[in-house]
Every structure is written in structure tokens, then in C-alpha cells.
Length: 206
Image 1: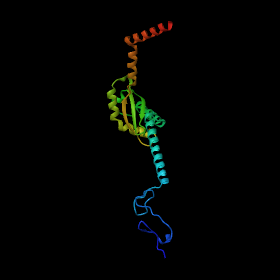
Image 2: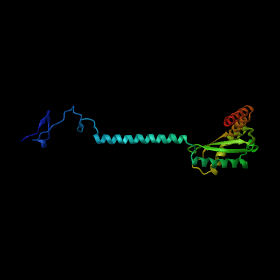
Image 3: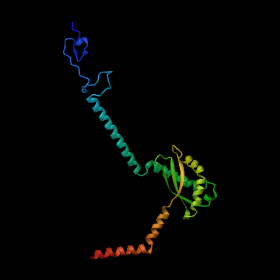
Image 4: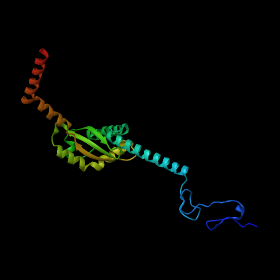
């Protein structure tokens, strides 16, 4: 009774008796190691599947990063614009009705040209301008003193998921526009503009 076929000093199981069996040598890496003899190595199809999965995951991360950067470069969302406009109306109404009992705010007429919201709607930057542009520092300090009260009033009047924190800034766009207008009306700039217009007319006539 044959007990097995020996190849490279290894005994084959009894059910292989009488058959030629070749056993790969330990130096042959073309086949995966048997269980318990070493780390598992993926087959060709498993390796290709793993690479495809990693490639897709990397592609999704790149696309998510691209969209995130594109969103950062874009302007405020419609939701942020709507929330800012609601807060602007609310704060303007509070100041107009005199609900804030502060001597500085009671003696100044304050306009609210714009409110800018953070992307998560948790911070509202309120731009204000005293009528005539006078006492800007005093008005800004008075608004900061009453910021807690104003925030509570906004939370009652505007239906948002979170009561946003608020901060006040002086709106200097009108001052910048006036400065640019003054520069354009200055004699030196006006002379340069008139000179350019004369040169263009001369070249057209030629």
C-alpha cells in the first residue's frame, strides 16, 4: 500500500497516493503561501480591485477638494444673502424705533447699508453709517456696548436655527466713493482726461 509520494522531502496526503505531485519550492513566489506559513498575498483580481477602489477614493477626494476651493472663491450663497437682508431690516427697525436706550444712539440717525453673513450663518457683520458721517467712533462704541441686547432682539425677530453673533463695522464705501469722485474732479486729473480726449479726436480726424 502506497503511503504517498515524496517530493523535496515533503509527505503528500494519502489521497494523492499513486499520482505525480509537484510541490513548489519555498523560493517560488508565484503562488500564495499556504495558511499559517506567511502573510496573505492578494491574487491578481483582488489586487486590481483594490487599486480600482483606491483610485476612485482618491478621485473623490480630489473632486471634493476642488469643489471646496471653488465654493470658497465664489460669493455668498442665496441663503446667506436672505439671512443678511432679514437681519438688516431687523436692526434698522430697532434703531429707528429707538428701542435701544443709549444717549449716543438716541441722538444719531444711523443707517444700515449692508449685513454680511458667514457661510455657516453664525456670524453677522453689520455695516452702519451715522447720518452725515459724524461721530463714527462714538456710534460704533455705543453699538458694541448694546451688542448683547441687539443680538437678543434679532434672535426674537429673525427665525434662524442659531442666533448669530454680531459685530459692527463702519461702512466706508460712501467715503471711498466720495474720495474717488474728488480725485476725478481735481484739476490735474481733469486736465489729463481732457488731453486724452483731444488726442483721440485728433487721431480720428487723421
